[in-house]
Image 1 (cartoon, rainbow, N blue to C red):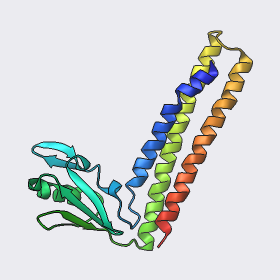
Image 2 (spheres, rainbow, N blue to C red; image 1 turned 135 degrees about the vertical axis):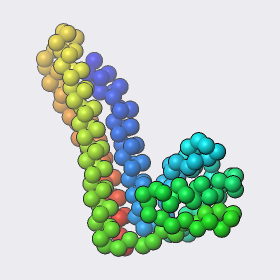
Image 3 (tube, rainbow, N blue to C red; image 1 turned 180 degrees about the vertical axis):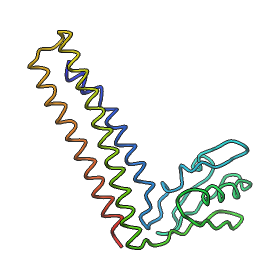
Image 4 (cartoon, helix red, strand yellow; image 1 turned 90 degrees about the vertical axis):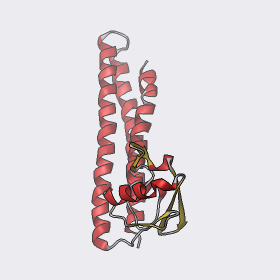
Length: 185
């Protein structure tokens, strides 16, 4: 019973991990990355579309992103979406494609990015804790309903904590890797 409760929650934990990875992918590290711009919302014939659904995004050089839209009429809208985003990037439209040069990060900006990284990490930990709390409540309700014994309840709590510790360890590993990436000159 307890193993079922914990096993069915694995997708929730994985979803929290995926969300954290997505958010960290948006952090600029001085290197070009498709994830910086692929989810930007672009006005496309009156509707908002995700950039990756309307253009090919490539990394021709370490500090350059090239965006080739499938419809050249959307070049201006893509350029506007990049300028309006909070990425502080300067796109160059040459009529065929848009190039974005990623400037090198200075020490101050790197420290700011580490702060944002730590905020995202804490958000992921909070999400994991919320999942743990809901599962613990479910285990307690099962004990109150007589489905499991009190001993099973406490062994379930220990199993649950091991799963939570595993995900917190993964979160920390991801954070350390990203911090190293940000601080590398």
